Image 1 (cartoon, rainbow over the protein chains, first blue to last red):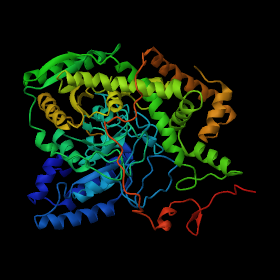
Image 2: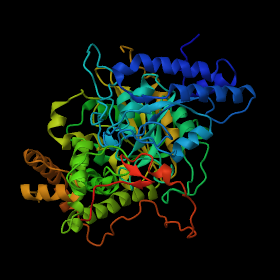
Image 3: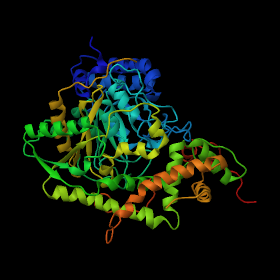
Image 4: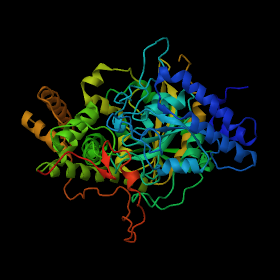
Length: 494
Length: 95
């Protein structure tokens, strides 16, 4: 029998419906793959084999009767940021030690409603704060990709590094992820997978551990554009429990995948050409432009003049919101408690021990920019800049641009323990330079693997769309995927 | 703008994160590096620009003012490090 874990989600779904194999067989294949790979890759922080097998059995019963939802019997990995009832939910943080929520996030509930099977919880940067998955309390995730001829360990990107590595290394059919500044798209680009951050409001944030509420959005990481479309169709939807969830019908995204780009206008923003950008990234971008043109799209140079201010504005807005959201971790309601001489002492000791260095740094920055006397100079100014960033995009779309093509990241995956980045937090932050604008403007963005660098590592392109027009991103993303014509499969060493 | 050692300690107290004496210098350097990075926002002309309050053009929904959930205190305290009779337990706050 063929290796079931290598199937795309779409192919696995077809196989299940045709009864070529059962969900129990598919699930067992993934559980065995995880058991073999996880000691090396560290993609999962918890596995739920009993729950997975029970879910698979229930799915097989439905499939046997010709019933079942759109994801019936499909085994998925879930980022540790999503609350899953009775199951490890710690945002990969020490401060949530032992937390087992009594409730289920809306996004995961939607997936179970549609028949999906949970394999376990995926590693991530602590509280989704990081671009390399090195801030996790559970240790770094290792990228299944290696440079040609090298044994050096590379990061899978972050914060959804576990999701990206697990999808790339065939440890789940697809995974949930979240994106606050690039946390779906950057790891997707680093691992040769497809990741989409939908429009703000498309997926409910209810039951997802909050980082920066005005920027956070859930989305899938998958092996193909079609798989990502199938996943998003199930994940998305209106939820009265999230006041920013948008009451709008969810299209069948998979139906848009083969729509093509004929007649579309694709904007190329000149501000995304950064100083010191590797020539390979520039070449990839030009290649993407040529592919879209060849399929009938019109390409237009555009300007998004406030691009360079998106990252600095983000590093005010996101820490500010985080400092408020993470105030709830106080050693009283859940997780870790470190006793002190009085209640304030207990709070301070619990939070100093429970939060890792990157989280503490961002909470300190967020507290500072919101403190009396600095609020207007930092926070209000950053929110004004954010208005200008969004306006740049609105002007481009008003001028007839249907989608915008950019590189996804300024480089391919880098090494675990990169000294430059560890010495200077700002260097690490620059990973999100092409993705963060999209969160600041609330727009949808997809990362699609489109080429490889000289050492054979995957590189991604990003498409940015109009609000709620994820369909155009799937259509154009599919054209990039088809034109690249490469199978992005790491060579197995684990 | 940059922060001095006293400010780092004050932020730590506000954030309820214990900052030990030997950590002050490291925090100070890192915070100042980030503040230096965001300094460039000062170049942007924001005269007459409204600060963003909602990234999607929407009004917050309202709902009827009635209780729609609850009645399970034992589940609420289930994850607490310390609880008694469905109350969260904390160190004494009033003498």
